[in-house]
Image (cartoon, rainbow, N blue to C red):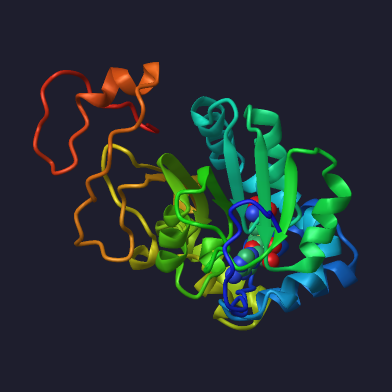
Length: 301
Ligand SMILES: C[S@@+](CC[C@H](N)C(=O)[O-])C[C@H]1O[C@@H](n2cnc3c(N)ncnc32)[C@H](O)[C@@H]1O
């Protein structure tokens, strides 16, 4: 656990545990993993959202075989967008939290694509963190065991919080994202990636495949329904969908509230005038009123 800024907390809640079914559904075809691996992933998929993180301990050793298929073959456009976003927005010396870091795949991406000074990779599963430890040997990284629903950090600690494929397995995705917002600095941002069931034929086919593979409907709950997708639209947020809506990449600022969609964006001090921000600062309008003086930020800013 990072000693700096670590906030003593009551014992973490039992962490949530189920992954996205599509990962294991696709792997047998593309990777031909042995039946033991597949069985372990399917067992995991049968669990409910919000169950203990111990479930991920069971599959930690085979997780990367499956996540590779998902990340490289199914949701690649979303992750390419994520890479570009962090490349463009993470500043030199940034302190980043990778929340629900798992085996550290995104932690490695953040190290490669950003000039960050420090990355804390937090996860509720010891097994997943053990795999991350075996892969990551960069002194900028610290691994932390903890619950992303109750982060053991003070408010305003990080420049960036990244969370990929984890909020959809939390019992309350909105509360989870609000917790991520809590720990970013006033000029920081949260970037999160989640999956939801696409509309139309693709969604119907997936639903069918999932129902067959899991023999239960639980796995469908890992795809966020429309009213569960935490987001707040303002000049400091962005949202893009990929693969027909299967994957969403979103960013939020400190001003955003996602626990109640009717709350307006909170007023916050304007972000520091980096050249990029300064260009758009005068156009930023929190209450919908047009602010004269410049163009609106491009998508992603
Ligand atoms: C599907 S994996 C995603 C891992 C990684 N972010 C990635 O992109 O591959 C979900 C991860 O969230 C972790 N997790 C589940 N519930 C959690 C919680 N409440 N707090 C922290 N981590 C949690 C699991 O242990 C697992 O490692």
